[in-house]
Image (tube, rainbow, N blue to C red; front, side, top):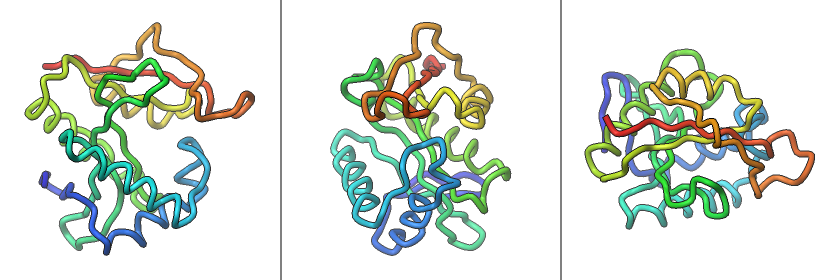
Length: 175
């Protein structure tokens, strides 16, 4: 568990499923992340992250301390195979739309990065997003990340012509 002034990042529990499913099913949240997910696809995502825990990785539920509300999903995971970030550690985040603009994503991502520096020997941590996702890229910049000049690629999970296929890579070196 990671605690920040306003947030708790913790391993997801069954009681988190409804809030996390609602985020994955929200077209606003998923607009630059991928297709909306039904409950089965959401559960598959949670299971995938549980599978990373043996390596000390996996996204956490983001809980707001003041009221215990589940507001997001954030953390570190292995870089996707068949992409230029395979073998790296990737930071990522997702917040429910009602919680946008309050600095929660930055707070959770900064805590995740600090945890990564403290618990891994990674020389850098990367983040990827669709080239069109300027909100995430602005956050990456605020996190001290730099866009990698040679980090643009076509993500193999998206079909030719999908606007999310073109992907950019940002990285931050170990402090």
